[in-house]
Amino acid sequence: MRLTLTTFLTLDGVYQAPGGPGEDPSGGFTHGGWSAPYGDEDFGRFMAEVFENADAFLLGRRTYEIFRSYWPQHDDPADPIASRLNHLPKYVVTETLPTVDWTGSRILSGDPVKAVAALKDRPGRELQIHGSGALAGTLLAAGLVDTLNLLSFPVVLGTGKRLFREGAMPGAYELAGWRTTPKGVVINTYERGGEVVYGDYSDEG
Image 1 (cartoon, rainbow, N blue to C red):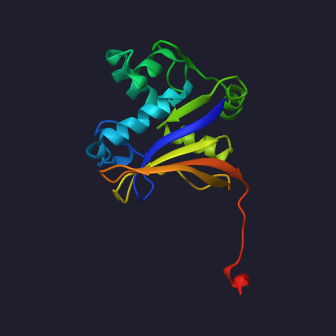
Image 2 (tube, rainbow, N blue to C red; image 1 turned 120 degrees about the vertical axis):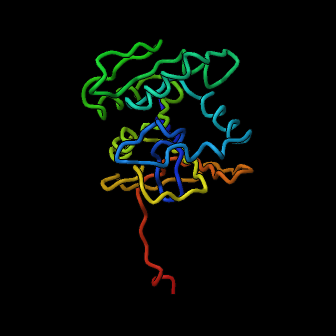
């Protein structure tokens, strides 16, 4: 399976608590819910397309708890997001939850990098990470993420957790698709393209 990361980012790279004030107030973060005013039909259509490609999900503890509190109560078979989240396998990376009880969920134990690499070796289309910023950062640093769906919202917060942190593995990506929504969300899809190529503008004469 390919490992695909879909995440919401501000213009200054913050991913923390996009959906509501109570999602993640850690570190004194007071800007929760910054993405909500920008949801529209185009945004929803893209997210439905992403979920249609999923064969399994990989979630950090906080994202698992957020999803677990909402989606089982909205199990509409016609909804491409609800139907997949509620019924496809979900692997949860956590050191604090002793058990997980959402249908199809299991705790992924051991070294997360090795465990995720083993999952990627299984047949299937996409193993998807949604949110789960700390886990995503670890897997980006290990070079395991194949596809990035980065949804950039026209917001600057100046504080909060950032996706690309010190220690990420250098790598080049190829732009595989892009679109914008009427409310100004820029959606870029990148495929991992190999090593970074360096140059010098002074060599261009």
